[in-house]
Length: 318
Ligand code: ASP
Image (cartoon, rainbow, N blue to C red; front, side, top):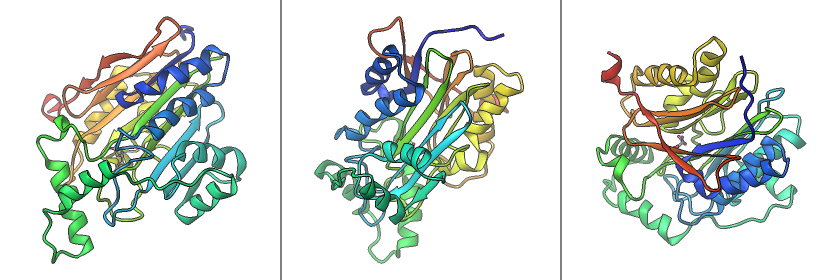
């Protein structure tokens, strides 16, 4: 049976700078979708976050390409943009795809065109800091490699780097925000610049409904960060919500989904992290790697609370 809770918002740890804005929307009686967008915009604008929006890390050719999606758990409406260049507001655009177009997913030149048509402000997304991080690893690559070999080598080095979880400048990342408003409507949003050095046009899990983002407020919502190719292959966000649907609690749903990720045959396997909330607002998060956290706020808190994610290792499941 559903236990009613008040308004609530959860997110990946880098969402902490946006959660107060999201919670302010909910406290003011705004919708879960308005809260999600309000929570993600400050992260997209944050020059110190090189995984999302402005100052995101560039692709193989040095261009920043953004992916984002939103999903409204009431009625399963969704919108997404992929490989967006030259505009920071990927989450606003994803929402516009949902609200303004008879479509669910716009990529590349079309996404850029839509941004211009909606009057969003164009911006050079590259910053000297992000370009320097990009440059440091590209310098170590054999100049005789073609683009395919460079993409393989860079992604494999980064994904296998044992220091990856500890790096002060992680070469990939994403922001997740899931909000539940006072009516019990749940919405979710995901925005990212994806993996640095990705092949141009590469889309990760973040803009793909079912992979990096899913909300159905009859059962709950989930969103992912990490190696998007793994979440794409496991339909991770949708799986978590289906596990909730078929009777698991949030912890069990997350552990089962991470178990599926750990079982993948993937020479580039890397971390994947999931945040999830059930229909009644119970929340938790999990990761394939240790020491990961997520953040949440509700009506009783004045600032984001950081909480541990479950670490589900491949060994613990064998
Ligand atoms: N999931 C994102 C992607 O694959 C990146 C990340 O969250 O680390 O594009």
